[in-house]
Length: 189
Image (cartoon, rainbow, N blue to C red; front, side, top):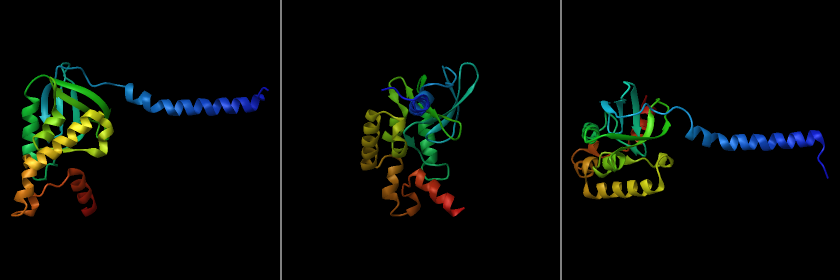
């Protein structure tokens, strides 16, 4: 039994559309522009999870570390988080594994110095949260390491987690996740 020509065209159109739509996310993730090649030098560190690099060709590469969220500039511990990231970035040649470009035109990337994952290092030091909302930007193994590192830093009261104890004297020092801080500030405006 053969399909009539109009029916066949409609069926082929539906199949083609489904294949095109299914393939778009994969194409967007793997193709497109890439950041300028390294080696990189640190141009500016903004906070505990974002910074600018200068590539070898002089291009500025804007970066946000995948899978973490560090205190905003007006939050307690933001300067310490920034200082921690600055120290890490200056410890050796910087490696980038880009994931995507965010709404602020920054490369969301896994950032490393040698084998050291800088997102994990920031969490281990207590200067960033594991950003579960964007867990798809990092591997399952990283997700597990980030969650465990956050628990360990919190239990040891490292970095911003020291604020849990200090908040008994000064409630403003209680660690507030940056995403909640941003949401609260949007509502207050």
